[in-house]
Image 1 (cartoon, rainbow, N blue to C red):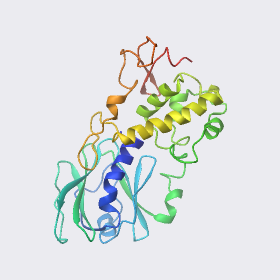
Image 2: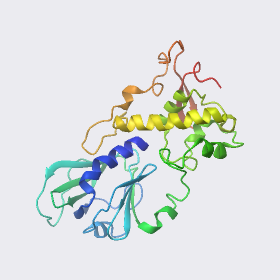
Image 3: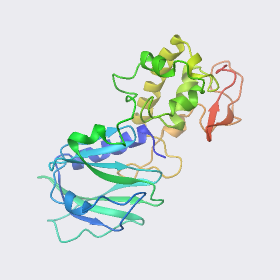
Image 4: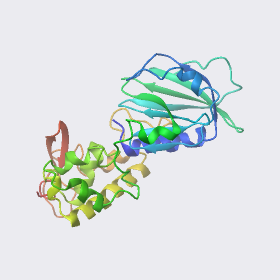
Length: 287
């Protein structure tokens, strides 16, 4: 599933095309993805202008001139695509292009009109239309924790959230109520950088280690965004390109391989926590 860096990469790829664009020729090829499309979805998008592109956790948000926000979650295989060609005036429909493409539209600015498609082979993604002034109160967002790259995320926040918590720190960091947008890959990588064992109870992590962890989380996310995210199977950016951060993994997916820590001499191990694979170095990350 795309995590925060991948979703942010998609947002940045769509931003120049969609910001300020008027949407038209909207075509929906099926009634649902993971959930049904909103009622009169194409009608409510058609003619609207995209005011800006935001991201909250693993969601893309497109506030519209109509007073609604178009919300998209990519699920596991959701992908926005740009055809790379300017097209002419809006016509009656926008043909569905790529395989598994379930939505297509055109985005018109004074400079160009670009075709945008949304494909989702496994259909675990979903879309919504929410009144913009009610987004934060919507069930998808109301319980989310702070953004890990935002000012609300700090060692003090983690200390409060982890207080008395016996659950291990790895699974605790995947709890979107504690911090929004983190996923399995980047939690493994951040814990390694911070030198914290994933087996440690969250409430037992010392304040100095929490300080290191916050820095490690920010650094690994920013490094991944700079590299265009990680492509392990399905992820591609809006231009169809792959991310490259997977080539820089310290532990994720490297079971049995030598730890990259200087003078470590250990090997990366894999365990299962909360039904997810955890990769770590037992030598560098002692409980």
